Image (tube, rainbow, N blue to C red; front, side, top):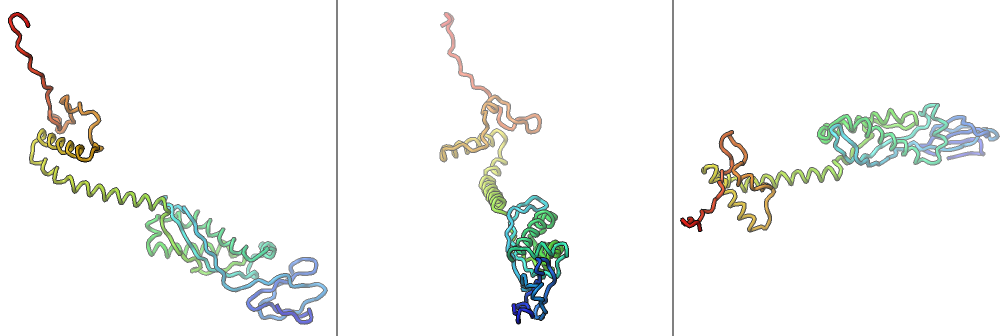
Length: 270
């Protein structure tokens, strides 16, 4: 700020001067590099607001997409402030801001609401994670935020919001890893038992079932643990029931109860 004889005033470079009357009411703005005449008895310089570029960085967690995937979204926002562009209804409010961090808070509040409740939830995760989706996200967020904050004298262009990071949150990533691991284990297990089932294909049902039981018994003896697919009630097979295959023959062998032969009785009955 430059003053001469407390009558002539010029704002600091790249700043807008705010002139108030001695009764505490807003009078006018003074543009950068402009000299103005102050009435020393009735006017004073209340504040100067800088016009240079500002940045706000924000990380939003658990933002839901349309397909209910929770993502973490990190953004960097570029904006400037020109109090001369603010709506008259907002002018008094913004001129009373205690410090310049208030502008950043307005930007962060606006982008949080827009991202969570409008832009992100309108697309699926796969749509947003693609190169086209990230470009859409950048332009949609920039446009919506510019319209939201312009009334406060905050200015930004259609490239203002930069997407620094977009990925599923930790819980969802762990679920994806668990799912991938389960598929790998299942595929490996299937490869290991495929030769066994191919061997069964050359045998009839009863022999194949007995061969399976022997292989399971060998695995139990080796590892000391029974596999999860063992039937809880083995009597289902021992009683000759089993699961019906074609409606006529049981899948398992129809094992008959073994009856111990009786010792021949003598004529005397002993």
